Amino acid sequence: MSIPDHPVPDAVTGVVVGDDGSGRALEAIEYAAEEAARRGTSLTVVRAWNIKNAVRPADVGPGVIPSTQEFQDATEAHTRARAESVAARFDVPVHAMALHGSPTKALLQLSRTADVVVVGDRGVTGLAGRIIGSVADTVVREAECPVVVVRRRQDG
Image (tube, rainbow, N blue to C red):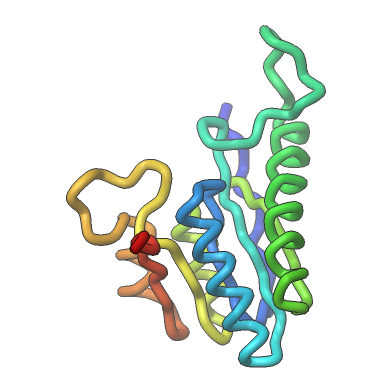
């Protein structure tokens, strides 16, 4: 039995950014928050999840498989905490959502009404040697609004 995808909300405006829980995604969230502040608009942080990449609920012990709702709640809480922490530094209104399903599909649907979509250059499953990951590549090619790809900051 498969878990149905969560519906993507309609009419999300402002700056939308994808979050996969990685450090690179956190850099993209920081860029997106700064962009939202510059534009005087809101920030929406979106985490698309599946059983493989969901945040495991802290209150579910070893050997126990969390329910879909527990995965959803833990992933959403983690996403909200990351989003609120960054947004507070830039004083922008923030919304966070966790959606079960494809990150590409979610970001493309949100691009219909967003002012801009921000993605990291590669996610947690990025293959070495790729310039950008598959989600970023597809979003750049198919989004209905401008897209910013945030590259990893170089030290020094």
